[in-house]
Amino acid sequence: MNSFWIYLLILAGSTYLIRAIPFAAVKQKITNRFVRSFLYYIPYTVLAAMTFPAALYATGNIYAAAAGLLVGAVFAVLEKGLTVVAVASCITVFAAEALL
Image (cartoon, rainbow, N blue to C red; front, top):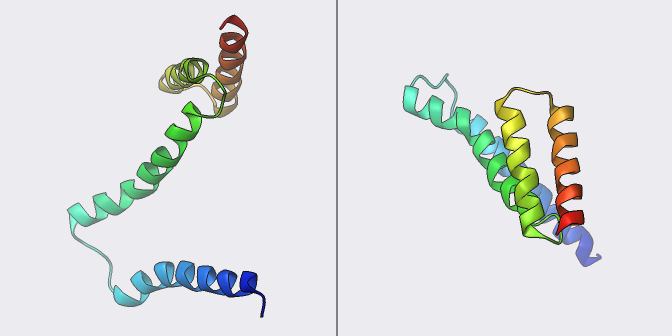
């Protein structure tokens, strides 16, 4: 058997077990406020941890990337739509790279 298929099976098995074990271990609804709050914020934390470094190193110039990230954050705080935030960030990065 090709080593690719072995790696694929191990990866699929480990991914499935990580998702299936909590469902099998916890039968009743979680009532602890701390645990529920912790589990509520996990997806946002993981998404931020993966997105922030990628946003800074997506371009060849870290200053242009930081400017785009800052503009995107400002537009997001102003509750603009996702498309507006993305377009404003892209335009800012493009302009900053042209100026730098």
